[in-house]
Every structure is written in C-alpha cells, then in structure tokens.
Length: 199
Image (cartoon, rainbow, N blue to C red; front, side, top):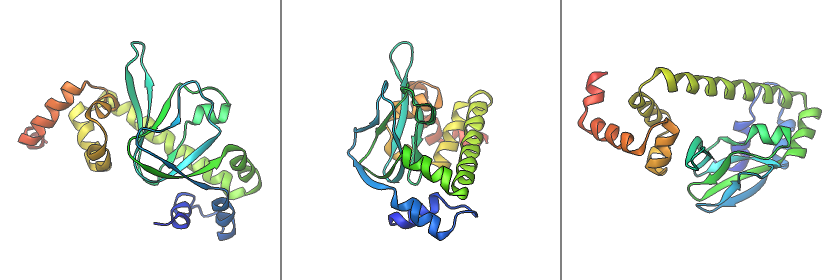
C-alpha cells in the first residue's frame, strides 16, 4: 500500500472530500525508524504524531520499581500518538519505541491543528477516532479484570498476530498484566491444547 492509499484509508470519513484528503496527505512527511529507535522518550514533549505504514512499535512506562510496562502496541496503519502530552503540551510519562525497522508518515501538531480548524470533516474524523480509541481503551481495562490471562493472550493472537511474532515475550507479558514466567506457562499449555480444549 503506497502512502496515498494508506493515508486515505486512515483518514477516511464521509465528510472528507478528495480535495480535503489531498490537503491532509500533503502535510505528512515520510520518516524511518531503525529497530530500537525512539519516537518519544519519557520527559520529552511531543510535537507530532505518526501513521505507521510498516513495522511494529510500542509505548511503555516505568513502574515504581523501574520496570518497563508495555501500555500499547502499534501495528501497521495505526496512529502512533501520546494523546495526553501532545494535546496538553506537557512532558510525557510514556516512551514510544520501534520494535522493528519502521516506515511512518509524520504530521506536525501545528499543521494538524490548522487542518482541524479549517476542514470541517477533519474535526469530525478526530471525534470519531477519539471515540473509537476510548472504546478500545475501556474494553481493555474491563478485560484486564474480567478475563483470564489466557483469554487475553488468545484474543491478542487472533486480533494482532504480528505482535506475537515480533515482540519480545517479556513485553507481551507486561502488556497482558502478567509475568513472563506466567506467559511461558500459558504458551506451553496452549501448545498442548489444554486451554483450547476447555473452551
């Protein structure tokens, strides 16, 4: 998928015309990240966001003991953003790092703000995107309480298999809210079919 098709797909909204989409696409620039590169570090104030065209990225925070806890994985076609810091112009508690070589399209926050206030459809797209992200966040919060770790792992396999293939086990474990030892046990039992047979 080339950048035009990618950005058209990401920003697709009934109120955005072809002319609007062309204007939006023109304000994005291609950026490349090597595996291990940071898009955002703790203590920095973000000034842009990304559309991930190829690769895998993650966001994480440090807990009170200094351990890395993965808060989100970004897969292809996702919007890579630290919303709170970007829109409030505050320093970030989260880090965002490339887990593989990544190809992205970046838009400066000031350019986005201009689009938001001059293209009516852009503001509606933004509201729809925020609503969807809030829904996903709420569902994940509830599932962390109501679902077994094995169920959450199976859901991740089904919905985001690229994370299972490319992310380190420890990072997946912290995202699921368990230890890597527990995740290893779950994977071992899954390979035997014990969890699947019980479902």
